[in-house]
Length: 85
Image (cartoon, rainbow, N blue to C red; front, side, top):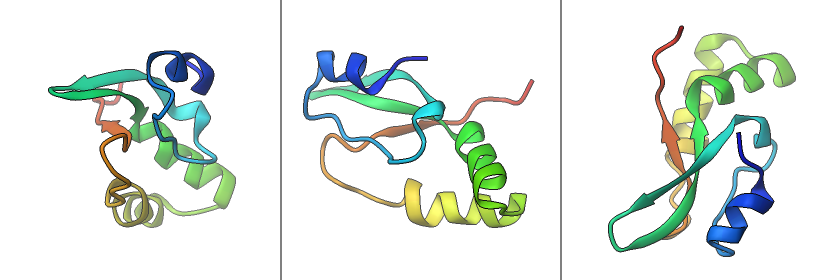
């Protein structure tokens, strides 16, 4: 896991999802774009369920509509879908 500060060392313009620092897994690069924050989708959904008391279905819907679907420019974070262990 990396912190916002560590990612900012690679790209000071990187954007972050407020309230989900525990879900940051590192940074990623896309062709012709600088490094951006990378988040674990399962962890985001877990945070929504525990912190906000959402059901799995509500947390998943919230993630896709409000987080995954938010384009904030070229430094928008990416979301990694990891197979559950």
